[in-house]
Image: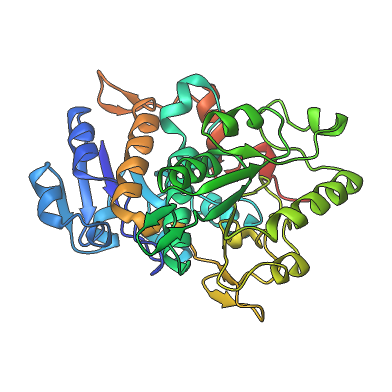
Length: 379
């Protein structure tokens, strides 16, 4: 069984799909591991560390992928990488399949068996494979660090001989994994933290972290969660009431962090231009959903926008990648935990159980076809 770890072709992607720790684990499964030269350099992992863990270094993507049974990446293979991969190769990555039907078709046409890590079901046995959670956790932490860096004042209350410095007020919108970590980090840094979410179950989580919950708690609010634990899209009437409450609250905040995403849909707009205009000069908005269209009106992907009233809207791309070493380490463990379920440990070969619920949930393409029900070609 030959496992290839390829470099990322996107210059904005510093993460890598394997680290020396997981290379050793793949070797223990009986795999030959080949790493493309320089694959881990942006994540602080030199080629020598991969070699010390038992991997072979290949000079190019073509050489690394040559004869590979399994290819590991952070992002799905680019079109010009597909001709390096033989038909029948298994590829595991964050595939970003929504709205990318052409890319899925190209992978199917190349005869690849592809698995999308972000489609992993949220069940107990898959928790260790949950890349959305591992990466969102880091994004929530980094959002607060970035917010503090852009905010021109101290975060905690400080009592000095020259007078008292008030604590910064931080408002977190969307209390998923990223939001909870943002709340915890902002609290550790001494801020006064409030948070909001349309899912009623999050109120207790917010309060358990020492923050205050802000929401219109009516009957619709009590039903606002899917069986899978995701937020439902709310009615226009509820959105109007919530927006009015949030608008008065945002005007008093120093740092606002938005994290709201709906799988397969554009990010919901949570903060209007009028809300941004109501904020104080020097206040900061961190939009973690900017790659999906953004939660903040006026956010620009990859840019920091300074508004007319002196507020900053921060739209960093690939926020987990801003902590490349830690993000790679967690992602590599997620990958290994999943791949281990695809391997026959006695024969030391890939033996994918196509009826396994993890496989069925994540398998995009197989035998020249797009097989995932959610991404069938439109008639």
